[in-house]
Image (cartoon, rainbow, N blue to C red; front, side, top):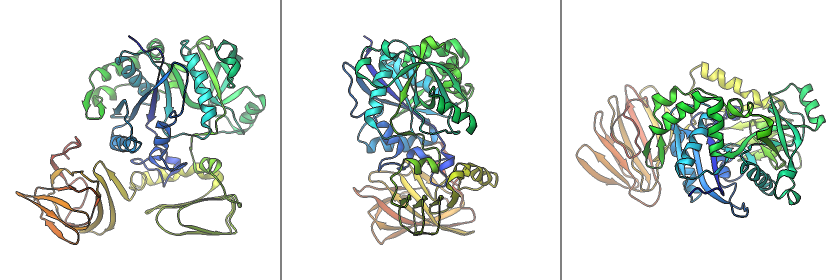
Amino acid sequence: MKNNHLIQTVILCGGAGTRLWPASRKYYPKQFLPLVTERTLLQDTAARLDDFTMDSWRIAEPIIVCNEEHRFLVAEQIRQLDRNAARIMLEPVGRNTAPALTLAALAAVEQGDDPVLLVMPADHAIQDSAAFFGAVRAGTEMAAKDYLVTFGVVPGRPETGYGYLLAGENITAERAQAAEASPAVCRLERFVEKPDMETATEYVQSGNYLWNSGIFMMRASVWLEKLNQFRPDIMASCQQAFDSQLSDGDFSRLDSAIFSECPSDSIDYAVMEKVASESSCVVALDAEWSDVGAWRALWDISKRDEDGNVTRGDVCSHATRNSLLFSESRLVTAVGLDNIVVVETADAVLVADKDQAQDVKLIVNQLIDGDRAEPSFHRRIHRPWGTYENVDVSERFQVKRIVVNPGATLSLQMHHHRAEHWIVVTGTAKVTCGDKVFLVTENQSTYISVGEKHRLENPGMVPLELIEVQCGSYLGEDDIVRYDDNYGRADT
């Protein structure tokens, strides 16, 4: 029997966050960072409905759609919340939001339900939970009547960085609980692309336009029906990829060859802009929303001191106003600055005028063109078993700090061109080297020769920290042959 009073949250976790470089990188983008609260943006999104209540409705654990390379980050951050995802679906390539939502909708109906989907990007911030809950209740009522619902943020200022929604006739009276609910519900007349400042000012002054939040609600069956009507090519590709998926522990893996052929399109373009206003509506959202799209946006929503500064980490300033100063690994000092962004990480520093900080993506493009690693990786690299951090590197040696999580195991592997020296700093290492298996404890070391099959494990209850010194003619990460791996990573 179908559960018609189920809200299935869908978290779309595929953003790159290039305008928040150097904190956000390709392989560790902004949704995995604690930018607004002590939790990451993904964790805040997953927990967003924790206190939500609505008569006769229940909330399902989220379906998360993410890039395949982020799978272990997603799983670990959800685990840290002490909860589970209903499903983590892995996209081998990005195909925008319409295919991602379609995969989630297919997963939802496969369970025998026809839930209302609440579709949320993983990298947004919403600080007024009560107002958000009111908007979700309004959206749920309309989605239960087979409306396609989007949420429009009440604009506080003209903004050229957002798309807009033109709200039509107010249909709040169609809601069963309209008398006790504040968010306005209007017919959705049209989507408008990002305007120039003059046009954005006219939109805000008219009172008829809302920012496009990228948050949606609809029944799973309604989305699939409308997508099949307007983009049957996307529907067919997603259905084929979904039918061929493989289960891999916590993950649902899509066939790379099949999904790569799927057309790329957004929820807006594929369906929402094509449906008649009679079957779509927009709920006004006034809940301190932000897409945290650039450093200026983060400054806007953060708590500021008496000088208008937002600071984090080891920061000392004098005669500095209206600035954002972030330190990750060392002391940052500022004197006489106004309206400036300074972001320090272990391997890069950004200094920018706050009003031009969104153009950091142009710097990222320059770095990519120069074949630099900084747009993609932090100095600390996250792996499913823990992390490693490059400490020093030269032509024939490299020094790394390695942390292995309790109970975690690296792959059984071999290197053609380098030898490795391991010095244990804290914890206990279980080492496989050739035919030998032995323990290495604090202040002890061992040596892995070139071509020797080896493995590193942490059998203890505390993190294992060690220093690895690599020596050899080639030190690239691709010099690895995996014989066995607990995490399903392909041989390299």
